[in-house]
Image (tube, rainbow, N blue to C red):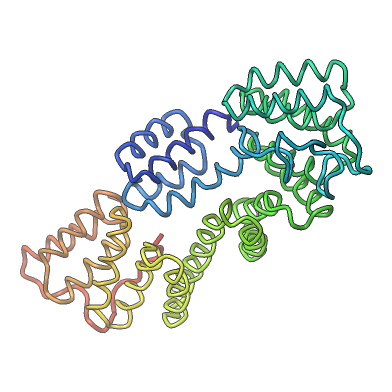
Length: 389
């Protein structure tokens, strides 16, 4: 189950990358991987082998932690409100926790919310929870207090108790969209993704402009339900509403969408379409390693060997652990007679995936010893590689 410590670790990795401190980011990543080996974000980075050599991709992956942290770890309070508002969060707009008409907040509730939020801003969730709990002894029917205590308990790591407050806030607020959205975020952080999806959809029924709910919907559609088309639609809306929070996530998904379509087209032999899709990914991120690898494959298959080498080299600058970029550059080098360079690339690929590329390396090494002619021709009549991921 994901836990607050993991979110904080991800945010620390992101902060190190923002500081351009690649060694620190790498150390944090390796430590996190040991503690949370099954986390999908960390595993996704691990699949790319090296953290600090593709920083933009890692930022896009870890941006998801910001959304969770904003909800549960003290950076986003009642929608559009501050702790100084005279009528704190009650009846202020259609996203308010209280769907009833505008009214004054009880002084005890206002004071508790003010001090609770200030404590969270200072990074003191224990103090915030204590203050809010005291107020709730007198006002257990306050949706605002329960909503705030979700944040305090989440930041403090007590997700079970935060869950209880979340349900209470939903009930007391008469299922106000903001309470539903907060619950969706809490479910996402707790790893209860199907429930998160359901709560996000309910929040969007009341407020179609809820960026957090849209982002949760998009993530689940992409990662769990494999509906990348609908996921991108939801993430695009989230990015339009909250660019700072979700632009990176949206653009990262669009890149992957085009990259995977490019890979699929290349696998079917439709190299023209593969190049079109790869170019769409590169418009967003010129360093996208998958798109460059697909371009390298497409050029090699169509006999454009020099262009293949160029694209594979660009892919390797972004992701030195891309075994398929190494393989296609090796075959292109072999076609041009640069066997020594081809052997070096295949040796690296075999070091990453011995079962897949060890035989290729041995075959090429044997050809080198025997003085055989090139194993691949400029016409692109090379053995088809089944998977370039």
